[in-house]
Image (cartoon, rainbow, N blue to C red; front, side):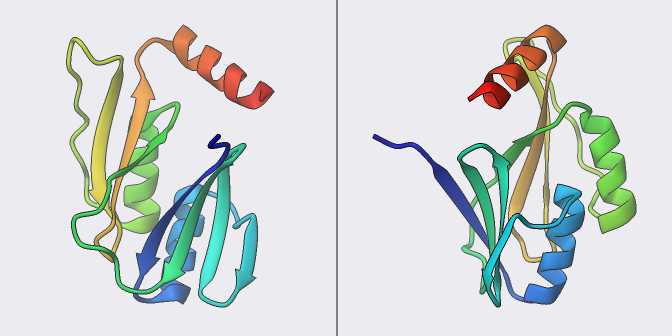
Length: 129
């Protein structure tokens, strides 16, 4: 039985990477077990780790759900100087999404539910677990 997930990205410059991901997550890490490694619990049982090292080519994107993708895109462009990414939609897809890269080449995507009732239900389900 699988009951948790961790996703790791590597950053060549750990101090800069830690600051960059603090701003991306908009909070401090939940756990820093040792130098060169930090973790955020995104939702119960789902952890994002940053580790000092070279990123794996072609990995990602890691997609993160947000409530307001345009607002997050603007916040990240202002505070982290990310590129202004295109937000995509398709009739058959229930979310809008966009992808950008961190300064080390890791691909990161954001997505937002189009149906806000569905979004509220997903949040309620995740929080109640």
